[in-house]
Image 1 (cartoon, each protein chain N blue to C red):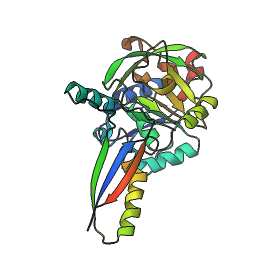
Image 2: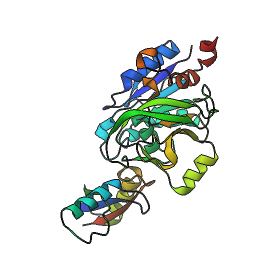
Image 3: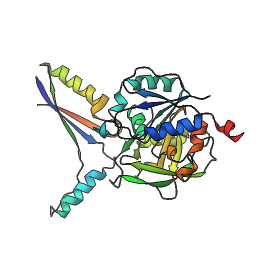
Image 4: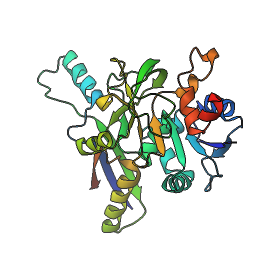
Length: 80
Length: 227
């Protein structure tokens, strides 16, 4: 079995009001010097295969088809 | 008599209002099609109503857009059939790639439920021809993810092609949508997606009728009702 972590984040230049709200809240908690916060999603995926190349290809296809909306989001796949 | 079909996904909640509007304006109840169907009946207008399909899990409209029925709807879109998506229906159509861009979390982060003003930006589409160019309509909105976004190139394309059907007018943009965009049509003009709810302003009991002409146009009832 292969375990992977997929990270989906908003593309640069896409406004992230949730990240902004988190950033402000960190400031209110007294954390100084927080330049910016961008929030996103993490998917931990287990695949029934030992084939790393196939896993990478499948995960990319999953991102393109469902996990990310590539109009506004970028994705990154890490095989763990 | 014109016919319509409403596509249902689990979690939609504005379907009854939409079915009532279509029934009253076309004179015939729409066919109701469950999301697991792989074929659609013949109809003059296909509608995806609003709500929260699949609880808006992952992204608003994302799961519904990958349902079996959407391949059939893609076929209808390519064949030139009229398709209307309202609110979650708009989100589903963008997630399915039937309309450009994406609908993101409202810029103010709050769910907004209020009346806005809409400007009819293109009165020549098959959905808006019952309005005058530049006409201002009242229309309710109720959504959490209505912040329309498209990259600069896509945006320039839809503006140049006259694909912006409605804009929020007079500073009533409730969600931060780029260029105040409230509704767009596809490149061929046969698919309309909009965040506001025209089905909730179709008869005097609603407190206004500004949404009615959209359905009259889409259901080819304009001439009949005027006569």
